[in-house]
Image (cartoon, rainbow, N blue to C red; front, top):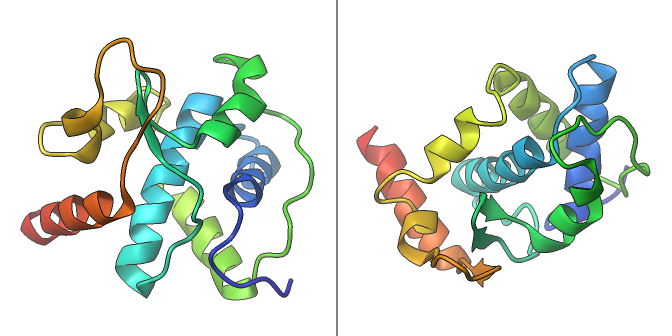
Length: 152
């Protein structure tokens, strides 16, 4: 694995899907979307780097990465059991993602959206009923999430 951040969000998603499937706890698309969001936030908070540069958008289901959402929407609320292998992800990032997935394995698909939709979070300030995908600027995610983590 020779890649370096930022990665393609699809590769990060495939890593997460495979991790959960290998652990016998396959992930749904809804949980995957929130895992991508929180992994991005935590990666930036701890490393000062973007995990991926693909847009994160506000939609009815909370924050989503549109191209990843579209790729796995055929699963609806069902677990994603198979996916293509992820591209190259460096060992440090692979360890981060594996540890992150382990730490969040106890959250259900509905727990995570409830967390991302709370007052003060970027989704809440940008989502408009009826709009499909409204991009959440990374600066807004960084500013709000870092401020909230400092007060937690």
